[in-house]
Length: 344
Image (cartoon, rainbow, N blue to C red):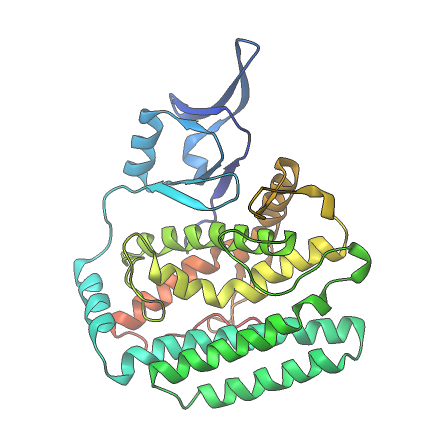
């Protein structure tokens, strides 16, 4: 089992990261003086995520590439820009099996896509059911949860890609159609549906930001077992797009990211005033809000859940690594089907 390493999130503009002997040093120039903000053992850091105007030394970039430490860059809105990638690891035979499966048109490929979509819809329904248990009856939410249950049943017999994507789209419409009713009206947050590039409201800003952060962690997990994160089974391949990471992200959107965002809103840990809007209507988090979200994510990663397939306690932060391992085992032929993560 891969040890859950710490992730370091740099959100302060003007920060400078460099390697000093066996430590990672974070500094910032204040009034002409370089001030040390943080110094930690570099081998204890598994991921480094930089947001906004953050500088990184070439020496540190080289270290990250050589040691498999993921170094990713995002703009102030949390949109992914680039990452440092070292040598490709893993067995070439595994990657060849992945490429062959992605290229084939028989139903075996669609089993992977179908299983992922089934897990996504099932977990989305779980978020709605949790709301009903906590807050009581709601006809709209109940109707949406009921339809998602039907879609799960119907999906299990599907192998046609178009049908699978059709059911996924319908499930998303039902889920996000009632998502606003999961938000406490007293918080002042308004959600009128998913908007992207840029997000048009604070809820979408937080969702898109965390989806982006988690997808990069999934990419690192896939590379760690020797898979190519750009060759997927559900999302189409595009230059620069980590399609396989986006595939696995579908399993974690509702139970991990959506629940985290809803919790922060309904507990009023974030406020409507914690966001800014640009001239084009794009909404972004203020620095303190982004820091709170990342701190909450780090805390969530330390929590343990029982993995439905392994039957063992697993830290939330390790789930991408576990799923990457299970997918690799399936592609090698050790597992008859890929078992996606379904939140219980």
